[in-house]
Image 1 (cartoon, rainbow, N blue to C red):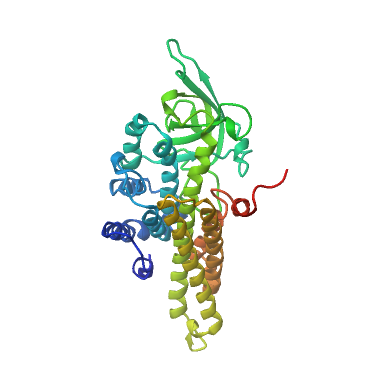
Image 2: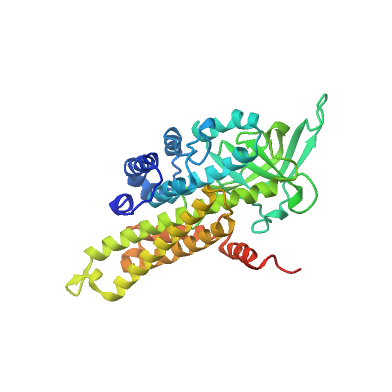
Length: 398
């Protein structure tokens, strides 16, 4: 990764420990992530051993309670770590964000016994998580999900005992087929949002299988697959929160997850800008560097401005969250703005490089393909506009 990512971005961090964490992240980026990123993405290689290193280094549980193996860091710090990781390789940054999202339901809504039993391994024990909300027929309309969990009473079990049996299909699952655990939203009651419950399901549970990974435009190193639940048995001790609370749990997690996507988008855009600036300084036409031409200078200036604005917006949302204040509207704005900015910046980076930008010899064509995905995941940008508008003028009339 270009030095300007690691050293040229001015960071406002709250503590010395936070500065040390960012220095550790940048060291791992330089040594372990950046050198093989292009080749591994082209080959579709998922860096599972790298995630084990991140786990050992304490970077997979940064925003969670140290009592359970987390880093105890505010979102303001966690998101800046994500940005650095995504700038080096989006598969890594997004993977950490999804893993954190997968831990959210247990960390926030689990019982003390559940957290003690499972969180340490999830946060620092080398495990990798998946978040299972979307389905083939329930994407933006997530409350319409059909995967069903039915309680089967066991002999001698009191009220609330027995196993749940899950049947259905989840779609667009990051880490599908390789995750060690899944946070699964399933229907336990009637139609609509109030009939959904959350469960923590082991990745190797009998009856849980993965379809072949999707063939995607970008992010080829990050497996995305459907997961099929065929009579998957889950004890009631792995139910997270109350019955019927699952959709509220999911929405709460997504508010935080959107900030992760926003930070990843800013990191990707920063990486594209760095390549464009370096190329513009070195490429000569008409006897001088193309960075001398005003049209190109203005393009670079606009790219940099979008990145700084996006960074400021996601950090403002993070600080609201850290202060315990309402941040959902700001999170939706950050996801919307930062991912749209990443799409524009990566498009402009390809233009700066001209014909070279359209080849795989330079990383900007990969950045462009990856940026498109960020406008879709964890709520399309059209859904973000719906969320923002509801905060402004209330729900739609029926």
